[in-house]
Image (cartoon, rainbow, N blue to C red; front, side, top):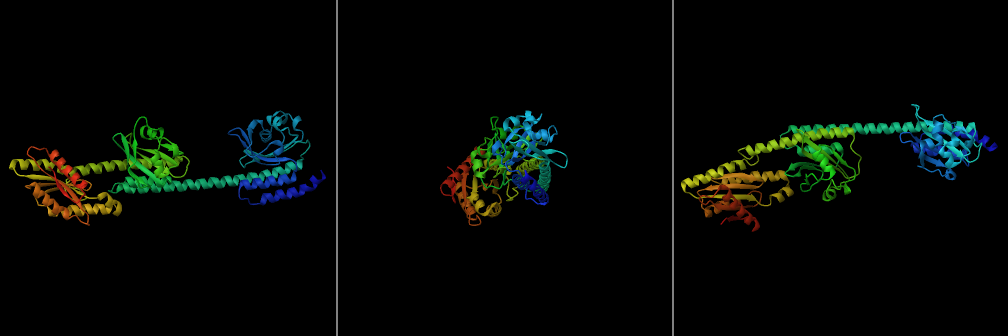
Length: 498
């Protein structure tokens, strides 16, 4: 006992030093405090416990010399069965040198388990008065601890409380800063998407990119209904063929919720989840995903799929609010795209090439055939198509592909007569009506026209001569079949239909 008396001033000095030390973390402070107590109380088990009142758990955070009692980090027991909660709540003393005889400690389940002779504990109390932990010691022998030890524990418990509050405040501040940065990033993304919506171009890709930016997701898709399927109409962060998802009643839960119940659905682990097809997971390296419905007039107009390549937690309330805003912008973008498509169908001239549209072709072709019938004159119908346009777009980019289409249409139009009719049917495919031409004459004309294809590119053509009484759809189909034959024969050809 004399040795203990001599050590106490040193212990108090060490405690004072601990109070003025700057620690890297609460865990670092805990190790320093327990190491100090281990030196000052040889043979006693010392530990820091968390009093988890929300879950009614007493959990050992860290311990020294706990082997005799079976104490170890993360050891948990029901809170009310511990010594510490009764000490912290004032139902039992902080210093007890005869635990079996104490009216509270002697009856708790901890005593049945540990059979301690002496107990010393002080609460770890925060500035708001909440007691969230305990700094405690156990010994087999009775009369092991003295008031001076309690004073030492109290000083060190205050050190731990200060460090815990400091670390908690710093963590809360980081979270707040992260939240503010995320909100700023989200609103900037919403603003950029709004500017894209105000422009005349298709804004769906810009909206998808905004959603990916707001959520820090490297990959994103926008899918829209097409029959009984949903097909991607815009994507960000990945270059792959269009994604198709079956929109059926028996869909996996994630897709069904997003498409049918108008609710977003988060997938924490996408690697083996029925909401995402294995090829999509493989192509995007998906680890987590979110399905965000795009709602217009109370029904699903599409869905955004956000994909993360590292596991993430579910989106926060603030991120969910931002994504709902962007989903509303996606609904507007889809509506604008549909309106532009409809206006394009109604337009008399193709906005890219300046030649007639498919709608004009469908109206003009029957009129030309009627004139040929009345005048008893020949007329030929051809389908002309740029060769390898998809490969050209892939190598040069779609902008250069659009320029090629525009230049080709201009060159071909200049080579035709005023009475001839040229219309853009779809992509790089054009229809040509050649009034007064026999099949052989039409083939010569088309060869001259194809030879003017710009940028060193080639074109193929199929041509059919109208037969009296033949519907417009049939003569066009024969020309289309001849074009297919020209493509199969190696391209850069004109083939006449039989």
